[in-house]
Amino acid sequence: MNVDNGDQRPLGLARLNEALESGTLRRVRSELNSMHPAEIADLLESLPPAQRDVVWELVDLASDGEVLVELNDEVRSKLVDGMEVEELVAATEGMDLDDLADLVPDLPETVTRQVLQSMDHQDRERLRSVLAYPEDSAGGLMEPDVVAVRPDVTLEVVIRYLRMRGELPRDTDVLFVVNRHDRYLGVLYLTTLLTEDPSRNVAEIFDTSIEGISATTDAGEVARLFETRDLVTAPVTAPDGRLVGRITVDDVVDVIRDQADHSIMSMAGLDEDEDMFAPVITSSRRRAIWLGVNLATAFLAAWVVGLFQATIEQVVALAVLMPVVASMGGIAGSQTLTLMIRGLALGQVQNSNARWLMIREVAVGALNGLAWAAVVAAATVLWFDSWMLGGIIALALLINLVVAAVSGVVIPLLMKRMGIDPALAGSVVLTTVTDAVGFLAFLGLGALLLT
Image 1 (cartoon, one colour):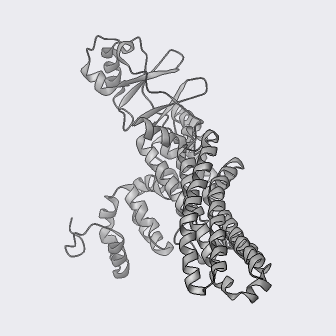
Image 2 (cartoon, rainbow, N blue to C red):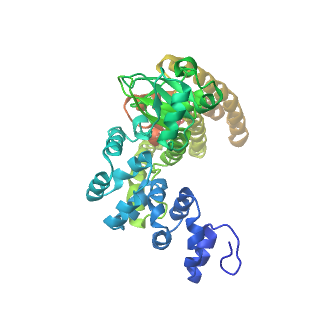
């Protein structure tokens, strides 16, 4: 379509900014609303609050609910706070139950009551079944609207039933087979239903290899199951085996993206749902906590250095070379820590193989320690003309790399056992250990052998 004097560029952040500056934003309203809700959400998250509010007003009310679901929690909360009750109720109309379950917890209580009252009894109970599970579980991810058939009917009966039903839930590629107690038995692929002899029974041809996923299964484990089993759709079952819903691959993609965001942001002590354009005071307050933790660990390392103040005054070269030992240990430990955090997230690291991993990482640390200790020792001898100083830094470097390897394995395992996210705090603890041990080993050996 032609807008803004024939400009046919795709509507993006640059064009929105141009329209905001020129006061012609309303000319792109139709183009904005022709975009997918996720694309609109990305644009909104990329705008400062004042501009975001202007663009949000241009989004059609019929799309508000779908756009809100795609936004991160903080941005969504701010937009919801600025909407009237009638707008929020209207925004929820026609939404899929799994998307509505994601949105309802962020709505005011009065809105939630009205939404529930506007639904028929069956949908209300289905929504409540989803809300009964944690958001980051299979039950919280599932779509409760499923099509189930019995194994003792013919394919012809199933086809007639589907025609009477009139429509199928979105992204339906299988029908679920259940017994008379609604316990899950297997799946009937639509391709099989359409290509097999209609006179055959479901029991003869349905697939029993697709196992149900317990509704209490963690979302990360759900993503792993979809990956390892190449699933497109999976049944969700209650503890007694009853079919309660289904999960589709588009929901799992969202989980994978959220986990990636969490890992990246947690390494810096940030929340993956933090609004990039949040007020300065709000962001400063959040980051101040993390900076305070880092400051405390820095003082611990400084205290270790202070123990050898007299030695450093006598041998100034120690002060020059201190960062080398600490830095090498920090890098080596971070490599091990990253592998461990990834392994824990993918379920590849368990108590049964932790000891083997420890031995492997110590061996890698020792081998790298020996190699780089020789390089650093040679450079130190050439720089300061001291074989003793070269030997001290080589030994300290070897010690720190081995300790870094051990710490990189032990720290995430201990944090996991204590219920702490290793991605959030692991790097801080590791840096403290490698700095303290590196300074202690290097300066301790220096004090012992050079003074």
